[in-house]
Amino acid sequence: MAPLPSVTPDTVVPPAAVVLVSGGLDSTTVLAAARAQGRAVYALSFDYGQRHASELGCARRQAQRWSVRDHRVVALHDFASMVSNATALVTQSAIEVPRARDVQDRGEVPVTYVPARNLLFLAYATAWAESLDAQEIWIGANVLDYSGYPDCRPAFFESFRATANLGTRAADGGPQLEIVAPLLNLSKHEIIAWGLQLGVDYADTISCYAPSAAKGSPGVVACGTCDSCQLRRRGFARAGVDDPTTYAVLDA
Amino acid sequence: MAPLPSVTPDTVVPPAAVVLVSGGLDSTTVLAAARAQGRAVYALSFDYGQRHASELGCARRQAQRWSVRDHRVVALHDFASMVSNATALVTQSAIEVPRARDVQDRGEVPVTYVPARNLLFLAYATAWAESLDAQEIWIGANVLDYSGYPDCRPAFFESFRATANLGTRAADGGPQLEIVAPLLNLSKHEIIAWGLQLGVDYADTISCYAPSAAKGSPGVVACGTCDSCQLRRRGFARAGVDDPTTYAVLDA
Image (cartoon, rainbow over all chains, first blue to last red; front, side, top):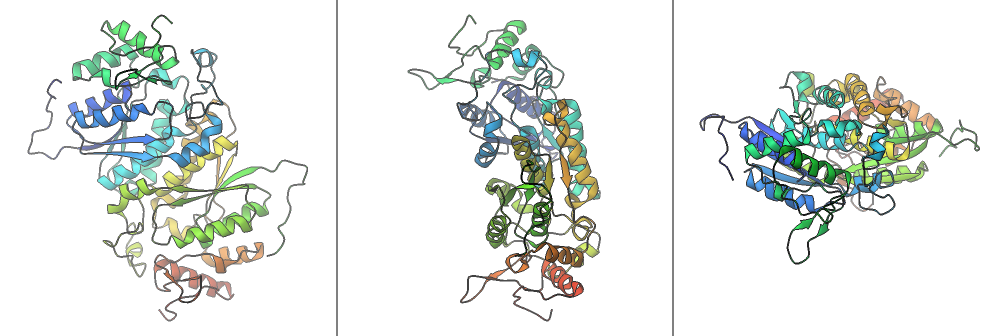
């Protein structure tokens, strides 16, 4: 791994940031960017019984690789139970994960949308940030998501920031919280190109909605056909670099 | 218990509401009010290792008494661990619960403030409401809290409502979520008077920040001296009704 650029001299206390880390391509890039900007990172992940739970293994390894100060994995089993009837992304077989971007192309919210997920993630991040005296929450939302997911759009993040600053000590003159979403206006290939510059090992990230265990090895095989796999594959192709992912189907 | 007023005829599907129920005086009154207004109630409680965990027993019994459709108790142990250094209300002995309103009177945020607690509670409630197609979240915040706690003020609730409607399917034309805070401008004695009209059994609610187990009975003894006990005692006195609470100290 490439050495990290050092923005902050060793004698200065680095600014602290809570970074939402899922183990996917986007959030791992954000983690690397926060470290490259000299942030003392507190990584936050969530276990909500997502189909792609192997992401959490990637999140743990990436947090360690990028030398975070602390990494918490919040158990959201109650949340999963509360929203399980309304999403395809929580473990349950009633709703099929779509194999293409058909739904989103029709202007509908995809079935992989999880009710109020980012609202909940950001609420946890705000609580932790306030306790840590950290003034930043970094999140890997980007333009490819926010056409479909309401909780990935700039207007939502801006409104959340205002709400968090009204509902915490910031309202009484404390330091203001910022939501940092550096990928918001980047396409997938731009994210990948930036991450490779930062030294991200994308082989240890997962994007697939329905991965399977690799036979005879500890790794994971991505399906290659779900929305998320297709976005990832096009991203690497357009970035002009090799895709280190193992896909079950390569010619979808 | 007095029979509930029936606002909605039996043949009409009643509007659904998520009601935050702690087992305290305020939220139990809100629960009763929601039922009196004909709402199908989904009660939501949180277990975050609060010092007054016996509240949850009250919450369970009140939810049953008021015939809710469902009652969930969300485990927030990870949250408690994340904020434990920054509040006196989560179980830990490092910070003493204040015995008077001194801090609040000085215009400071009380040490019993829990970072981003209502933001987190409302995020969970929003997720559940969206999954249930419920358009209301009822919460028992009131004027006595919002002078001290930033997350109990009207500006916070108004901002949260806007954020929730930007971050859920409401943003794409779905029904808008409302935050109902019927106690916001009521003083404690007005809340008690209203609750008694609705048939609330206040003997089975807890306000105390530091209750102890009753000797030789299954009940709980309130300290009688903490902020919350003093507010409660003054409320019953000003309402001109008997206070059914058992206090350890009566002449504070």
